[in-house]
Every structure is written in C-alpha cells, then in structure tokens.
Amino acid sequence: MNDAAFWIWLLRTLGPAAVLQDILQYFGSARGLYEAGSAEWRLSGLLTAKQITALTRFSPSQSADVLRDCAQNGWKLVTPDSLLYPNRLRELRNLPPVLFVWGDETVLLREAQIAVVGTRKASAYGLRVTSLLTEALAKSGMVVVSGGALGVDSAAHEGALRAGGKTIAVLGCGLGTDYLRENGGLRRRIAQNGAVISEFLPYSPASRTTFPLRNRVISALAPGTVVIEAGEHSGSLITARCAMEQGRDLFAVPGDVISSAFTGANRLIRDGAKPVFSPMDVLEEYLYRFPDELHAAETEKSFGELLRENGEARPAGPPPAASAQRQQETPPLTETPQSAPQGVLPDTVSGEARTVYRALNGAGKHIDELAEETGLSTAACLSALTELELYGCAALQEGRKYRKI
Image (cartoon, rainbow, N blue to C red; front, side, top):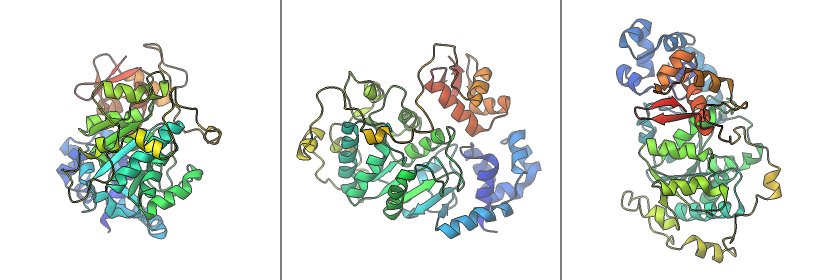
C-alpha cells in the first residue's frame, strides 16, 4: 500500500494540528504507528484513550478516495517521510501529517522565504506598502508566503507575481473548495508560479477552526514574518504569536499612531519586532544566511521614495478607508472580536469556546489536558483558545499552559 495512504489515515483520524512529534519519533512513521496496533499504542503512553479510539475508526485502505481526487486534479501529497517536506515544519510538535500541494512542490524547499500577513480590510496605503515590499523582496529571490485571503494577503501574492518571483499560499480550507471565489484566478496564478498548499483534506470547508491552525504553518514555513496594518485584535497577530513561539524573526511595518488600524503592528514594534521602513530592513537579515538564493536588488529605497516613484504619497492623516469595491466583498468567516469585560464571555463566542472556558482555571492547563477534559479534539481546543485569547478571556503562560482571565 502507498505510504501516503497511512499519512492520510493519520490526518483523518487524529485531525489537523494533532501533537504528532513524539508519536512519530516513537513509531517512526504513520505506517509504523498503524502496524504497531492498539496494544502498543496503549503501552507507549503517548496516545490518549480518545485518540486510540479515533485511530480505529478508519483504515489506510479508506484513503483511496483522497488519493484518487489528488491524481485527477494534479494535486501532489508531501508527507514527513518525503525529501520535499520542509524541515521547518518538522520542528513543529503539531506538524501537518500531509501537505496537499497544487503547483510546484519543490518551492517548499527554498530556504529564503518570508511570511507576510495583515488585515483583510486593508487601507489603500497598507495594500500599496505590501505590494511594494513583496515585489522588492521577490526580485531579490525571496519566496513570499501568505494566506491567500483578501486584503494584505492578496497584495503580498500579487507583488511577488509582478516581480516574476515565487509565492506560496497556505489555505485555511481544503484544495478544491469554492472559498473566496473572487480569488480563484489569483490562486491559479500562484499555482503556476509557486504553490497553493493545505493541510486539510480536499474539499474541507473553511471555518473559524481552520484559520488559526493554518496560521502556524504560514509562520513556520519562513524564518521571518512581516506584519502589515494589523489592528489590536487582528487575526494576523495570531500568526505573529506563532512566529514568536517558533523562534522566528518578527518584523512590522509602523503605521499611523492615531489610527486603530495600525495598533497591533505598532505594539509589536514596541514589544521588540523589528520595524520595516524599507525592503532592505528585511533582506539584510537573510543575505548572508542564504547567499545562494538571495541577491541585493534595488531594495535600499524607503517606502516613501517607492511610493513617490509610483505616483503616490503616504497620507498625512489616518489611512483612507477601504474602497467601495472592498466594502462590498464577502465578509471573512472569522470576524474580528472585541475585547470583553474581564471574566465575562460575549454572546458571540462559539460553543467550543464556552466549553473550554469552563474547563480553564487561574493556574493554567495544557491543551492536551483541556482536550481530555472537554472531549474536544486538539484542533478544536486550539481554535477555541485562540478565540478566547482574542476576546481577552484566556492567556498563554509559561509551560505552554492556558489560564482563565
């Protein structure tokens, strides 16, 4: 049987973002895990009773439908036992068991990558800065990684494509899903000049659970992440947090201090992120680390110079509102929450978030402990915790434990 079938079985049974690193080190591979059997699973002490039950619900032979869909659509599968699997993803405790790839899977091996994230409702200034930054970095040889969404994500991919460079879109849904139809053409161009990837089974819908999970992959692929135009509760701050937890470099483009649209990015700079005033502020960190992939193009110019050369100038006041066209776009599935009073859950939180909140205490609990207590999957707990963090109802502390606020 194709080894990929075993990895699909593992993904299907334990789900995306399951903590697999210790399990794979013990059993060697997904095939090794399956062939060990339930008795060895229990003896290892690495799997919960719930996980052992989940592993018995499917068999690798039931992966044939996924393999067939991938073959028919020209999608590749990259698994941890493949030489094409990115080494940076192997460092994750919750590494993806499968990457479904539409496009050139070899681009995943490029060392010089930079993640670029920001708000979906970006101002004209934010979009232009994103475009100029990514175009300059792509011309220098960097692969631009982003999430394929509206706003800053789209501008990042477009900038790289305009430079004739490579770009990677990490989706929060399965390949083949009709999500963000207006970005379908962009995804096709990315597949022709890079790769569109997903850790979710083909045709899996996007949800408020999937977006926080994909953010850790965006930040893990690249040695550094740039945050552009992020408000105080922007979802892109989740990616920034992931980057910091993963030991990656963190950059932020400073914005108008009197505009709430830039509060998140400005606070990142206050807390230690490197401010980006020109593409060279990013590139200089990697020129000597990846000399075979990068070269210093015309990146020394500041954004002000680049904007003026393109017939634009930075607005003196707060950034202009998004265009009417963007205002008419379909709103994202994950709305930006507002902070709740301490100890009070807003009415808009999900049922999973309420369940996890009830299980939290002031001392802190590990995500595996929460999954065991609540009966939710690790992925569902992670999504719920992210939701609670954004509402200001939970916080991550030392030891990777979450506590109630």
